[in-house]
Image (cartoon, rainbow, N blue to C red; front, side):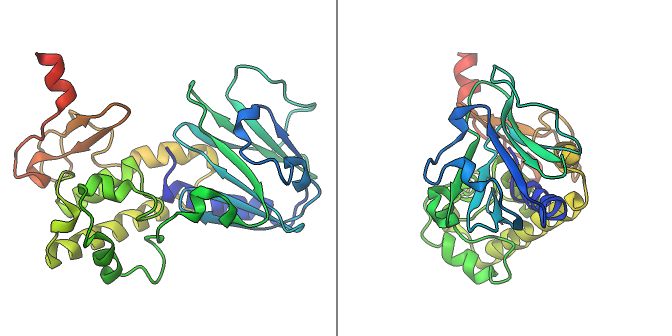
Length: 287
């Protein structure tokens, strides 16, 4: 799933390639991708792009007609830039193409989604706050006013484990499964630690890890072409998706805890005092 660093990089890429250009076509291929109907998606056609914004994991293309074309790429969605779009309209089918946006230059981009769970979402709204997912977002962790005190206040009464708290978009915007693993590894904290139990020193470590991990990921992604961002993300991850590999810090074996639709990775020596965390799904399989 694209998270804050990748969406920030896509925002920068689209800012460079879209601003000042006219959107001549917005062509939905998978009708399920459209989550709004008033104004219709065609109302964005004829607009000149004036700005591109990021709200958490949402991309927001602002047009001169006062409308916003907003997308959330979900777990398996992606944006593919085309220097020259194919001639003729795309054909609906079972392929990954969900929506196409064409410029007056013949350039444009496709929104695609792999797999069978179609969660990619596109909205056309007059105000981004009309998108429910944006309206409920918590603060952006890279914003100038997101300081250590604000993080402490967010976690003070939070009774969930740190892994779940960091992934909650209404608490902190933009962090998902991969970067929550990376942040907790950098902070040397168990993903199962209760958020409200952090000491001032632990809050300081978590804040430093949060800012550093995301800032470094944004810096690595900046200037990378849209088509290479996935590979850039994977290459920069230390523990997420690396089950069975040695920890790059201490050399211990990276372990995994599986859930119904996701998993987390961690280093026992760095994060849990050397003790493996219980993996209930694995335990059931071994019975």
